[in-house]
Amino acid sequence: MVTNAQQLQDAVDEIRQAGAFAYDTEFIGESTYIPQLCLIQLATRTALWLVDPFEIENLDPIWELIADPDVTTIVHAGAQDLEPVERHLNRTPANIVDTQVAAGFVGQPYPVSLARLVMEVTGWTVAKGMTFTDWSARPLSAMQLRYAADDVRYLPLIWDRMQKKLQEFGHTDSCTEECEAGCQPGAFLPDLNKQCRKIHRRNSMRHNQWIRLHHLMTLRDRCAREANVPPRTLIPDGCISDLARRNPTTTQAIQQLRGMPRPTVDRYGSDILAALADEGEDGVPDRPEQLPEETATTRTQIDSIWATINCWAMAAGRSPAMVGTRNEIAECIGQGGLVKQEQSPWTHGGRERVAGDFLLRFLRGECTLPMQWKDDRLALQAEAD
Image (tube, rainbow, N blue to C red):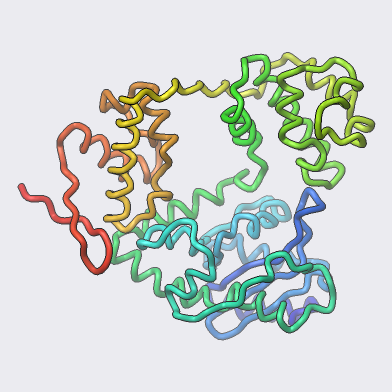
């Protein structure tokens, strides 16, 4: 246990000497905008530390470690665990390895749980069932401490073995690129456009409704941050959608929306009305095009191409989820680019270079997809001339 600044500095010094460490956190995010940090787990091949953030005021030595490109930080599904680095240092995490991402490049499914990955790579079984425990309570029980320690205990070993697999598959660069993409500046900020697109996909909106939706989402995020509450508890997504569609003009009409919290209307009713009345489009991205309804022909095309990508990915040792989605295929076909064999569903990065290049060559008849069953899995077979 690390409960004072000197113990923390000793741990950080030892980690810097090791050059690589595993990192995880336990937090509670149900009642605050920024999750409450309750425990930090650190591990090298030879030592493991559980840092109590309730006892140590300055945790910057840990964030500095994670932002240091000369130190490898190993996480598993670590996006939310890495967020404090940019918030506290105004710098991004560097030299991050996410074993969940790496698993998707060595023939494992994506996403894969840590417990399943530990079993697959090491043969050990780790405890489950503490996901919803109260990590803010003190003292922590022996079972809680063991559970928390297991979240980092095996990661150095897993990464050692995964590096060899990545080299065998030729996916080291792709894995690195994918891990780096999740640590770009602003990557840990709320993606309001993505949230708006999700609502728009469920219920198509007209242009003016789309503008109102963005103004409302921006307002909700700002107010939730100021009040330090989760945005959805302030205004649920369903209410956001109804507000954008119905465009109420009084606080009484807002209150009548099903599921709309009364305290929110009392405190922010005038702000909501102002956001609804704002017709400005500055900062509002273009409204996503609605895909045409799939005909029997286009559905066959989409399913056929999606099946091809799935088989190619699995035979190449990649999880199909690390390549793309059926929706991306459908959108590209809807725009006509894929049928004309001119545009792949992926427009940049490794997915375009690797998956996009294969798919376009396949559709043009420039290559085939020969596969075989080898070592209990699909494998690509060398093409004949």
